[in-house]
Image (cartoon, rainbow, N blue to C red):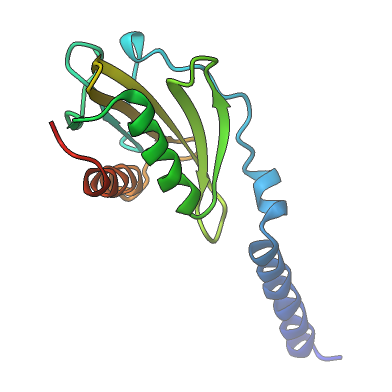
Amino acid sequence: MTLVKWLLVAGIAVVLAIAVLIWEGRMLERIFAVGKVPAIDFATLKRADTPNQYLTCPNNLCTAYIDDLPTVYAAGVAEVRDAWEALMQREPRVVELRRDPDGLQIDYVQRSRLLRFPDLITIRFIALDEKRTTVAIYSRSIYGQGDMGVNKERIRAWVAQLNSILDLS
């Protein structure tokens, strides 16, 4: 076999191997593991110096830099949480990782479609009174420095969907 034919066969084999990894996904999910997910305390949250994160949080809860202030919903915590969970059921590649015993804070992972890079999303449901609720949401990439705005786009899209389901205060 000539060198050119050998290189062509080797190149095709590499491309096929990469395609199988991407298509299957599980191997990439093992390579890009989530690892131990730290519990987030929004009141003491310290953000990394990287742009691959996004935080929406009430001023009176978070001392870290806030990208956006959250919406206030004219609904109780249970109603907001139920609407959020219904939304998460429809989202691709989202898996719940942990839920506080009181059900007020939930951690998720969402993986990118092709390379299965994991992003962590933590939401806290905050009762302002019996009929008004807001949320704190922190979305961040586990790997890399940049995210091309994915965390910001994700949270803004999810909040927009939530806003279309629930009445605003």
